Image (cartoon, rainbow, N blue to C red):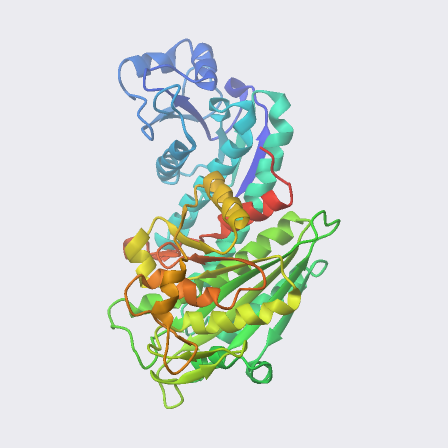
Length: 497
């Protein structure tokens, strides 16, 4: 599907469909009013009769409108005239795409951009394309339907907004490619997407983006030499051995010399190990690598955008299985940092993988490290499936992530890392235990990770509740790729809108 930024004489355009808006007060948008005048009041007559009431997301498809060249006009409800928000765009596009995909429409002119102001046209385009892409992905993947739509053109009435709209289009398509790449990788079955497969996908990035991406794969023998014993212990029970991929992105004309490290938990399947999970919904544990997939997708978007930054992405691939070589409750592991960990639950494996990776990345002298992980069911209990948990040791990093969250509506919520929680991971036979003892599971897991992040500014995103959806539309959400991309765009000063 292609997108274009153009300016049209709507009544003369030969296209399959033009989308225009109607407010709840039965008032027409500028574009709808323009078409109404050329059709001698045909549209306003239908609106005044109550054929569409202007509620957000309501639709009315019109054929053969007098004096209009377009084959169809789709009227969409936009709610109250002065209360239109970006959140309404998702509902409008969801309902519109359902209608339009039922018929063989290939080309659409989307003429609702006048609803926005000069300062926000960038975000209007971003939000609209994001909503369209999400809906098309669901239709195509989950409902197994063909997509007829080939192109969508945005009608920009004020030509002074063209450049801003074109920048928004460029950013939108790059970020969507990152989100889609993460979704496709996450949705693969675990008999295909194992740690080696994940590593090979990372290697392909260095071929596609050879001018600014290089990839190094760390195998089991190299991990042994590095002393990554906690990471290795998790993979001991599986025939699919762990691989860690280091993706180095070097932007051209870098204006920011900071080294930004993104670490993704990549448990391509998590059975729980000896502390095996209940069988119900265990098949969804193929999504335990969504953190790694989100880092992969973010690096794709960064390369497409040619961000002037230095970014290192780490895909921590592993598989946690029960077996004769599996690590056990009661084991004591010597981590790469030299700190020891008593294993109380082998299903608390992600933090064991991440603690060694957090130590490994010290060699890059990073300014910022963000790990992304489907880490705890406790985070789902605390925040549900709408909001990602955020933990950090740096206030500026928190502010920047929260700003990106607000801009993209990819919601995050900060949880505490108070000193009091450290006593819950105390062990009398090692430096720490790998699970807490008094509840607050998401917090004690983050508290555990924080013990390995003393040398840099660090944030942890627990995406256990937001990385995928269950039920009829089961599949990866691609979160938090858009959030991370916006965070990087802001750092690179590519968005001031």
